[in-house]
Amino acid sequence: MTRCSRSLLAGLCLAALGASAQAVVLTGEVRAIDAQQILTPQSNSSPVVIRYYVPEGERVKKGDVVLRIDPGQSASRIPDLEAEIEQALAKNAKDVAELQVKAVQAETELVDAEAELATAKLDARIPRELISALDYDRYQGDLDRTTREAALKRKQLDAARAAVQRAVSDGQLQVRKLELERDYHTAMVRTSEVKADRDGVVVHGFNNNWIGGRIDEGSSTMPGSKAGEVVSSGRMNVRAWALEPDRRDLKVGQPVDLSFDALPGKRVPGRIEFISGAPERRPEWGEGRYFTVDVTLDSGSLALMPGMSVRIIVRPPAATANGGKGR
Image (cartoon, rainbow, N blue to C red; front, side, top):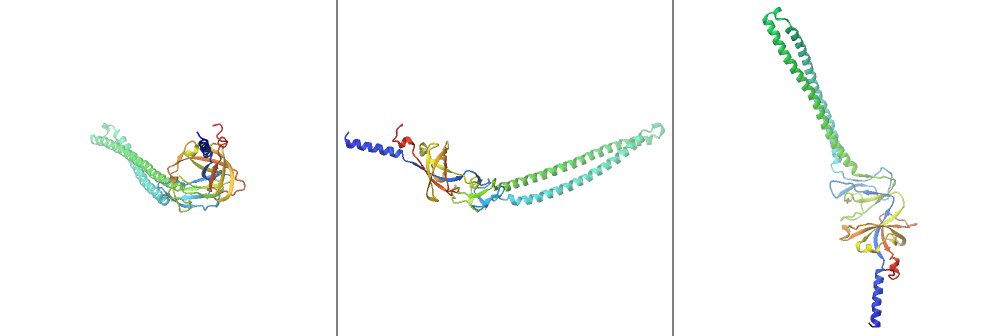
């Protein structure tokens, strides 16, 4: 091998080593550590329209409504169901009252029949030899008739009382059905809004679907997606995403340098704190799969806001920087 060939080969090897030692560049965004994620409420339709959203930067208190979507027909159904419940209660009370009157009448008729039966029993006890045969037969016939009449009136009273109980039960069932439907729609209205679980400042997010753009009042977004945050303190970190081929060059604890699009010329050091165990697809970015990477940083006096885009330069490992020693 000539000297020129050896020099060329050495140059290629050094170039290859230099290429392997190139820093990995990731993109990410600033996240607030002490923050409540504002998730778009679940809905029967998709996407959903945000009907109310607290303006970005506005301070809210715990319990305040920060976001609300259109609950559909649930909001209009609640007053109708309240009216139907009142009507059902009134109708049930009327039906029960009418049946109770019939039960009282049946009870009165039973009392009369039992009184008549008691009289017939006394007459039927008169010895045959003390009265005429005609009267004796008539008394026995009256006893048989009043016995059957009293039994019939007793059955009618039992049926009337059962009808009252059945009407009460049916009415309660109907009212309970309407109440459950009302409670369902009430829950739909309640779950269509998001309340702050802490004091803080509202920060709007960005759509992660084909619509794109910042999420504001009137925007369309997907149920369950992140619409923003309620930030309660100034603690920040960075969430980045690394393509599958770049994962082998990343390690937990590896130092990085971060720069921010909104703060040109500013660069702060950081360190990789966490790398997800499996990649995930992000359809809005294409066909690739990405590992989630969390980076801690020393922001110092930088005025960072959640959602700021970040450029992360991952410093090469020391072994690579030393020309590949230890490989």
